[in-house]
Length: 141
Image (cartoon, rainbow, N blue to C red; front, side):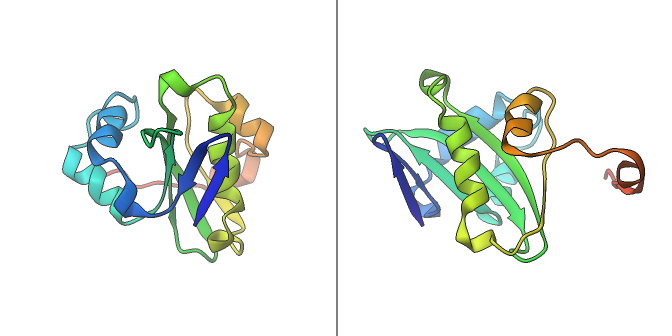
């Protein structure tokens, strides 16, 4: 799948992904800085990946979904290179991921963020509350 806007492209073709650029950006994040590069790349290969490319073909951003494409998805590793920020590209990237026909049946999409709640709330995400939050569990290994 491919989407175009103002010369930028979002594409799900994993062969177009710039491995080194993506790993460099993810290693600089609070959520993936301690994950070995090979593990990061394996997580990308085994997910629905969305590469964002600038008009000159540079890897300008990235996002991925861990999903069964039917009931559940986890949005992860969303970023736009600093040089391209401030143009609404991050919102476009997330909107595009959420509108992807490949996940149209998915009813629950979750994510975890420490610093982008406002962006995701504007898109429609909410923080788990009450019984739903209390019923959500994790196993750290």
